[in-house]
Length: 115
Figure: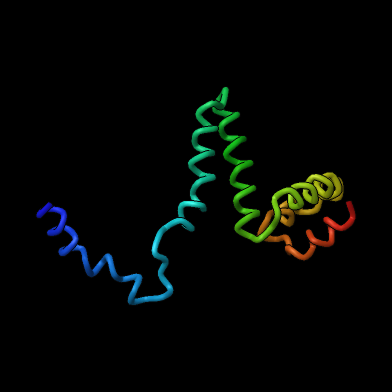
């Protein structure tokens, strides 16, 4: 018991920092929610049948998470990309224009309305 109290006493300044700064959260749930898909993806990649399959899965997952980071709904982002990709390839347009950071979230809302 003495060891536990000594630990608390020694760590007290670190334990109360969230009380002194209202911007800090009491827990790390938000961070854990953000890394959960990464941990889940890691487990899924273990079952990839080949190295190429694992790389394809990692690429797909990276695009999904990048879409989310750019405030895009992944379903509508991929639907738009898959519909526009043939036109880009046919016309020789740069496909980099279809990467998540080059898409306006408002454009997807307009796109989703035309289902």
